[in-house]
Length: 95
Image 1 (cartoon, one colour):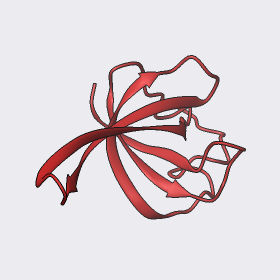
Image 2 (cartoon, helix red, strand yellow):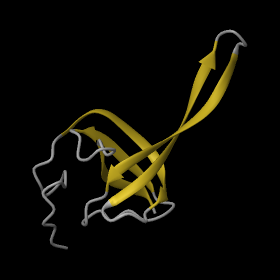
Image 3 (tube, one colour):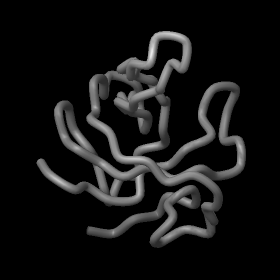
């Protein structure tokens, strides 16, 4: 597949740095954007328990990767691409 996306980390010139996370795609309705939900745990010292939390991250979805709903993907931090997007999908772990 030919990828002409300049914001693609593989075929374009977009560099990524910083945090790399793994999460599940919960929405793919927007054009070239997916919402990735990342689950993580925080320890609360006062109660000596772990608290399960989740974060919803808007990420750029290049045409060559084309992640769909319920895919498990890796996302990497990059420069700000729009008002809300600062992450890009780098690969699909599990379809």
